[in-house]
Length: 332
Figure (tube, rainbow, N blue to C red):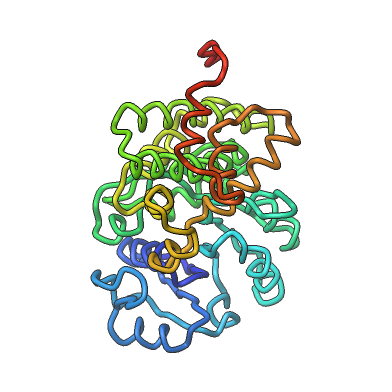
């Protein structure tokens, strides 16, 4: 049995806590809302996220971060990307020993354009960092529906230990050395999911969805490899796997936001109804900045950015994408 702190009592943090307890780990879930924490402890449910799912009464929740971090071997961080730096600063201040810190967050920090593992490494001294990512909707993980994921870390021992921690009868975990690739795939697929949602909202059907996913994957891979990732990582669970799940699932917040935009709703209206953050909204801005920095052509990402941040008509963006100049399908 390992002692684990899960930081963030949203849908993903709650689901991961339940997964780990069911596999025999001792888990403390930290959330900033003391009333929510009390409800989780009393009922084994998270009434704000995954409210219809009985997680487990084995999860011990607390709003005291120092208590959550005390004597833990692993710290799994499941906060929104914009909150990662703040969380890392607090972890550095309050954690004892040298636990493995696992990022469960899919995003890029606005301004610095840093990946989540970079933020942790530069904030927590001598941190042993890993990343867990893949096609893992919290709703399905919480129900024990078979799923697979990938853990990435530069250190062989860290990869093996995190893989062992998360392996469960309903949750299979693979390892990968390519931290950059896993994180960039996880972040950029959210932007493509917004594009797919827009296409669905405009009624463009299966052909349009397939084209966006395939060409979106090409954009994801181009940017990732320019940043030092291995291209084959994007063909794995963190890339194609997560892309398929996020672009096609009814659970996908990013796809839902795109569909709402196509139907005339604002981003703020869509986010308010969802009650949860769609990471692709912020990531669209970061990806366009990275594309400019690395001189990578990413027309789908650019179109999503223009729709969200410049108010461009989605139908006009589709027309412009379809009428770009002739090109080869260069996949190699």
